[in-house]
Length: 441
Image (cartoon, rainbow, N blue to C red; front, side, top):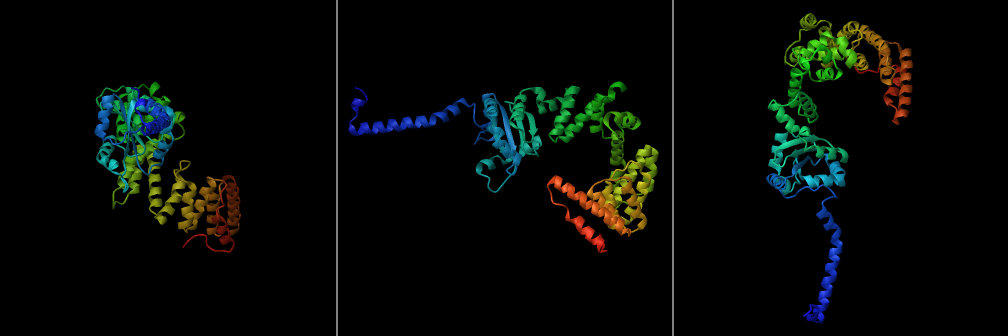
């Protein structure tokens, strides 16, 4: 007997109703079912409801890599990844096919649901294990659960796709390089790559350790004809830390040659920074220690010559300035600019302004004027400082002329920058015209 023959009137109407709505349901769901089955379009699919242990088990069973998006609820670049990169069809197709992906919230909020709270402990362990301290951080694991890759910061679709595609290549796997380095099986070119990758990931201890290995094992063993290549000198300048390194003597004794390759005063600035770190800063960081500048000056000049002398002068200048010891700062300001020549290490206008604001001795104010005249800067800030120094010395007419110049310069710049002119300059000019002090106290 046919199916329809067994239906009475009421049953037949019910059957037609059922078939009509079932057919309509299939028509409506076909696009959705098609997308879910193909898995080749739409956003990146992040698993929900699984623990970290279950994510690892799923990846192992499916022989897929693991991608963890470590984010914070307040992180704008993280939200931009959600809105843009993860919505890209090409990215989604590649990631969905080759990875088990999960989102890991690294901060905690009062509105966290049970799912987020279940991940608290695992999130903490991942943070400690992989040094996650910037967001977003992307972590990648092999199917066996071994961490192989890490990246930090927003990635557009093209760059994230390149990142994901590179994860399967051991040469692009950060943790694979790190493991080889720690076991002593990393070649020098790979070691150099590890240095810069670790640095980009804020893994500074690892970057410094690998840099020491590359410097001592490779660069410092090169002949002079090779060590003076631009790339090698750049690396030394970035990662040299001690006066005991070969690179220190290289930079100290060959300053002109290094500067001809890297740029003006690069060698001496690096040498002086190391002198400061080793000889001066440790003493300044000690509490209740009065610096004997004369002894320091004598000793470092004897040991490092002109560069030692200049670094002590820079340190003493800054010590008085930042300590707001205005009496000593004013007196040393005169000495410093009389002896430092063209090697000034500080912002001329900022120092001169504090001389104007905090020093009353005419000898020192005149010295500041001479310094500004010798290092003329045609901007409103420098012109304003110069005008105020003149005014404090009683040279009112000249001061007004320079302050008017500062106002005109500021107005021109304001038009270019589509900003409002700085009202302070007009207020200063009004004080000068009416004979009122432009300084406090």
